[in-house]
Image (cartoon, rainbow, N blue to C red):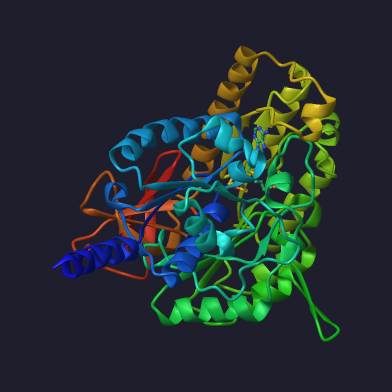
Length: 457
Ligand code: SAH
Ligand code: SF4
Ligand code: F3S
């Protein structure tokens, strides 16, 4: 009898041990979202079921971002919320992974005792061991950065995809060391992934019914792979992916202006299915600030690159990132940013207040001396101006016919479908058949600053 009871108990334990349920929550950039798909794949192979409800999870991983202080604060608040789950279920493991884990390393355990596992962006292959280690009550951390890791052969489990569009990570890390930026410290040295594994992944996605892939890297223009004496650069790679099928749209992000080559512009111009959309972060319109940011280009150089794009691809969508209130930025220097925004007429922009990041060059060498309310005032002015620019850009499209890849129904109006054109502009249009899929041609007849509104041809 005793034996039987123990036997049953043993099975109960096995059952518990076999119950591996993973919930992943992701913050930050597309690279992080792409990384979560790699993490899901690694842990699925280790027997985990990937679930959507954190209440049933045995392991919760938070894939984090450190880019601005605000991003980290959000994650801190999230961790406090998770404490209560842990009270209810003491066996629950909480892991902090990604850029904030890399930045804080073991300090995470001191500041957030609810965290059991810490893993940086290059140590995801060790997650099964870290989880096992944490289950035995040991603090489990791996924040070693690698010069080779690209997770090249790992087939991502598509967590963030609508089945239409997917991310493909083509390189990792960044060594541009813009003075304000934490990424070179959280993601380590730049390294590229083998072109064949990238092309294979894109082919497989196309065969599964996907219509669009976005090639991802912190600076895709410096992609480089050397094999048997041959060098594959980004224009070569994007051509290889573009050649897979004319119905597979190819996007890429993000491009550093210093490396935006004429070859790349030609590759985009030469392929109907390589989208006419370039995200080209400018950060500032003033040369002194650009130099202080260590961006390695001038305003004139940036404008020349924009002109080169527009010469070869007249209808190219150009978007950007801008920081206001960087250390010692004067009113006149801020005005240079506004004038550049007017001069280029960006289709869209991500705009930020400078946020000092620990251990960056700017934090070590310069004073964060633009007062918070002044940063806010500059940001407001910039956002207003960009909205006018986006509206103007969208108004110029009224009367045009654009090719849209349908992504689903519009959030605001379920009778309308929503998709994007090649330039990455959001298009909504009325249709009786909301089950339509794939590409459609839409005539634009109205717009807001964020959306083109049209009718199906
Ligand atoms: N590798 C990309 C940028 C990734 S971070 C590129 O260079 O294009 C995305 C954007 O966040 C940056 O372009 C920059 O505008 C902004 N950013 C980065 N660090 C910042 C900081 N410390 N404060 C405010 N914004 C920042
Ligand atoms: Fe940061 Fe500059 Fe690298 Fe972009 S290029 S990730 S802004 S250091
Ligand atoms: Fe954030 Fe890391 Fe991306 S800091 S923006 S998640 S590379």
